[in-house]
Length: 124
Figure (cartoon, rainbow, N blue to C red):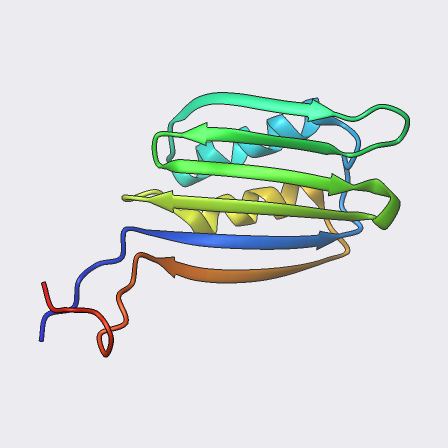
């Protein structure tokens, strides 16, 4: 049986005690640095900071997929999402984000996207 490659990998980063939870410009720079570290191509960026101590939400659209961020300063928490396909180095992107945001702790969940459950999916 031949093993098919997965279309992409998805990393979910739960960061606690990270820097820049209320700074959309700094988060965009960190996300762009992560894309660069991965060898990904940025297509566009859209980030929004909420007033009066609110957090930031945003996405960096990549040719290889995306990097997104949502922050909750009142919880000292940031949720980042990295989805990449092709030859982009998703692990390098995660390391760059951890370096830039310097969280006290970070939990990473890694998921292969597009895998078929061979027991329940028809053969190609």
